[in-house]
Image 1 (cartoon, rainbow, N blue to C red):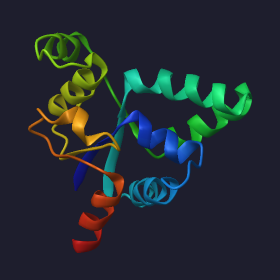
Image 2: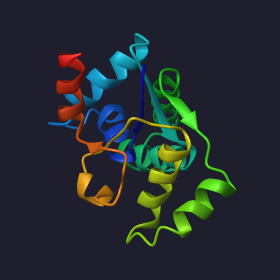
Image 3: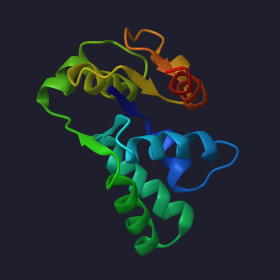
Length: 140
């Protein structure tokens, strides 16, 4: 089974029904729901997802409900001292992306799913768009 890390932007595409990105994000979450893949978000992303959803929706309860529904399908990957220290030692331009990568590395993820693949150019874990990941799923 493939293990993937869903970046914050893709999680928000799903939760907020952001067009034109929603369809691919939904396909990934649905595939995880059917236990065909194991999808994760980093624990550090969860607070960002909630904050940005609440701000966009202007409704705390709706943001919480949507986040809970998402997390009923997608697992939370821990961010520990190990991942933070690994990220600090990467010297990447964006620390948040370095943390995401360190979480993916620590949890043996096969892919990082993001719309910002250029942010993971130094990653040895393939960082691919949701659309590209959906094509991979169709091929298997």
